[in-house]
Amino acid sequence: MGDFLATIYPWTKSLHVMSVISWMAGLFYLPRLFVRHTESVSLGSDTDRLFQDMEMKLFRVIMRPAMMSSWLFGLCLVATPGVVDWSAGWSWLKAGSVIAMTVFHYWCDKRRLDFVAGENKLTGRQYRMMNEVPTLLMLIIVTMIIAKPF
Image (cartoon, rainbow, N blue to C red; front, side, top):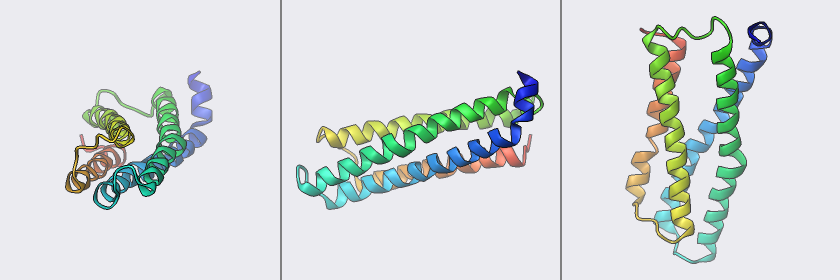
């Protein structure tokens, strides 16, 4: 299996990067939709239903498949001999940050479902602040995988 993964490594890495870009685009955009949904839309209006539809399609059609393929190709990379040194601290911080990104992904889905149920309790300001979470995690992940500082 290791020889096969080493042979297809460039393809796996390419597909992983494309998947992560798609996932991150959704993670950056969905909280921004929540800001506008919270600040500019009346509950039960046609616009409310439009926002719910946009948020649902972004999550189900782009974000969920992109997250799943990011994990799939990422785990293939981890299983490729010589790619990850688990004795180094960077690999553990990167792995923890990817798990945190996944938790944020599901936090966004819970907030989306709050809108569907008419139970959103967060403000636009709170969504703006939460919109920084994927950026901070991305900075950690990219630094760990490229610079491998420790």
